[in-house]
Length: 390
Ligand code: NAD
Ligand code: MG
Image 1 (tube, rainbow, N blue to C red):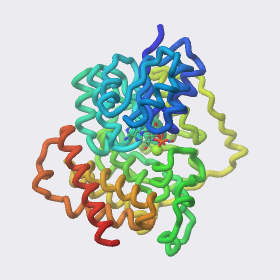
Image 2 (image 1 turned 180 degrees about the horizontal axis):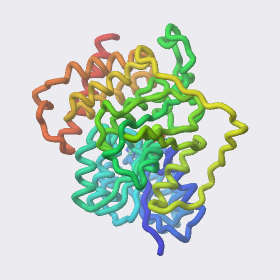
Image 3 (image 1 turned 30 degrees about the vertical axis):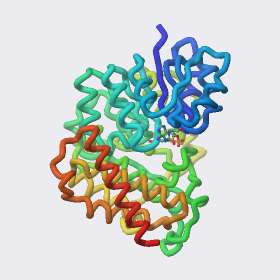
């Protein structure tokens, strides 16, 4: 039986890895929707190759070029935010959520509402609206499967286990581009330096977030929301080789580690074939050749983002949406050259405290509108701080 699949963020790093797996067994899948942004040439080429029903660019200004690139093919071209949401409502069995940023939340919710299994790479969905996403899944008898490598690792270590017997969950962090850069040099690192990861090939935004550990901060919150454990049970461990992705510690002292090469096709493939396993085109580790793996505690002075994650979990409610929105906007500022690398965390911390207890956010229910409003206020607050500083 063929499975109907859609890929949101198909032109990105996760999207392309997902397409790589699906294109290896085209007879097994019927591709419903592929979505992208600016890169309509890639989007159109993949939509033609995979025989997608629709191809959607998030940018309405790109509709004409998408149409032109699809000329003569049966693929329908669509554009804009509404089209993206329409595509999410098209019946599918399995939907990859791989848009980067808060923009990935709404399509994922709609996919769950129509009962699709949601393969979740978009960690921002859980950071901004974890309880809403998980409740939507339960309500519609739909499933969320983790795709982030650490969370896929935890999920796999928990197969057949009782979460009540879990003492702690350890997620590893490579340390990113600057793990060995002296603290005093961090203020002046360049965009190009921050955009290169020692182990993983990923989109630019998550690569920079890895260097600042904002990515790990998001992942700590993602762990809490997805697995329902308490913040005190979650630990971060620096592991420069990126081979051990996560470890789950049980009440009897056993520690189950998930070990594998840094290749996202493993986690994507696990979510694609779950609850079964199927052969995947990832390298097999030769541990004797690797010889040694190393671990160390993260330096919290070096990575304020990790401390902020703790505060966000403590605050709850819309704090995650504020945190993520401020982080995204500060990252825009760093990419645009308006602020330095270390200023990102400084701005995010200021915005978190400015908006803590904000009358429009405190005690507001966690629904899509309020999450969007918190995100908007956070971005505006970052803009104001950057403008003040200029
Ligand atoms: P990427 O930048 O390579 O791709 C992002 C995709 O989202 C592209 O298709 C782009 O066109 C689309 N997009 C961007 N902004 C959009 C918007 N406003 N509306 C609609 N579409 C938009 O990113 P990536 O590295 O593939 O990461 C995607 C998601 O997966 C992120 O949430 C990231 O944190 C997560 N993730 C990525 C990796 C990885 O290895 N790349 C690993 C774990 C988790
Ligand atoms: Mg990860």
